[in-house]
Image (cartoon, rainbow, N blue to C red; front, side, top):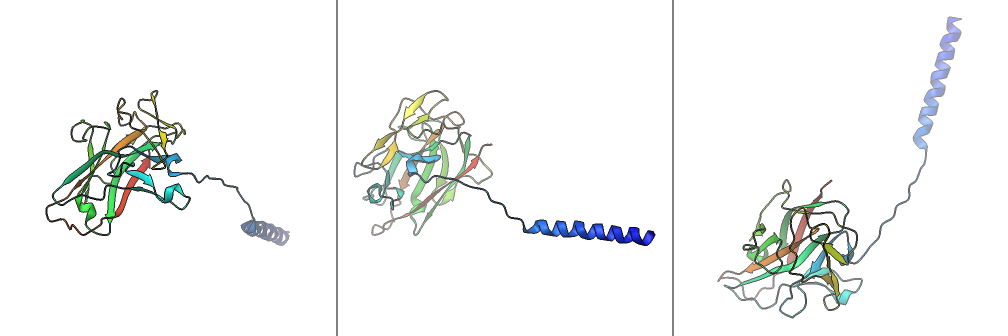
Length: 232
């Protein structure tokens, strides 16, 4: 009797083991979906504001808005050594996610010394110098980042998933119309400032501060990296 019970127990264990092993070869699937849109319509989007020296927005699309184009900043083509050129609203950053977004820091990379001449602020008053409007945060200072990714230098409030506007205070909607020359959405509204944690947008000021010994025969190109973290 004991032998039969042991054999029965061993048989049950073998059956259970074979069932367990069989489950390792199951198949399942899940569908997914996402949309590819114009850079002016993304959940975290850039908008134009100030004009560059050619009377077109600093922020613009290349290739006349073709599908192969990309968004870029044209900061002017004729800046001399020992000169400072500042765009108080080179572009804006707008949050369309339905939760807040923390901008943690900004980094600039370049193939030459261009980033060493550049200063970048986040601030609220579009037509005022960031150093004067009281809200300015210096995030890039001539080759040195102002903050690391443990910080939150500006909080973009939750957006509304509507790229035709941005919100100053939770209720006041500001139009972000379409610029057919730069092929981006834009705003030149001076009546409503951005306030961290209250507005879903912020202005980006860029200053080019060239020293007397800047290379006058060079063209400076690079990339502005914007790092964010979800607020939830």
